Image (cartoon, rainbow, N blue to C red; front, side, top):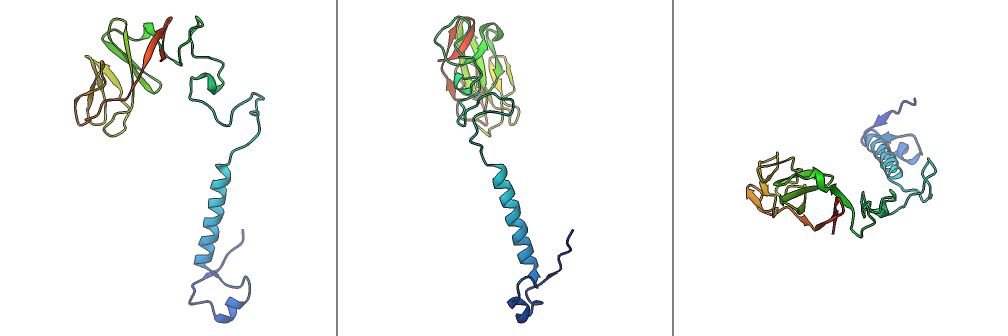
Length: 178
């Protein structure tokens, strides 16, 4: 490894400034190192325009959301009966009446028999993920906000905005985005 001797600006004489490569100030060394690091980061963030993965399968440079047909996973999201619904969020049998489950990015609830709702799992107070559904309430562990399984509205704070709702419907044995 090369040993770089650095000098402060005050230590470099006028004569040394006139000759290339004879005076490396700390500032120049740090700027060079910073530029090299930034170049490495930018190169790592680059995208490839090739059309196949290393395993030979195709992919899109603009993929759709996970679980959607556009994501290229071969699942149309319409259920096994060929229905016309959106992405499958959960199986009907997995969501208890009077309760719910947390699946992917959603809280899927069944407040009354046969009525299904889906809300974002991200608490509207501080952005934490809710983690429990109990007693008709969706709970956030960060600051103990609670939300209704029927409306997503906060029932106790500090959250003061409802969880965003996604419209859903039953398609065969699945709950799908409407």
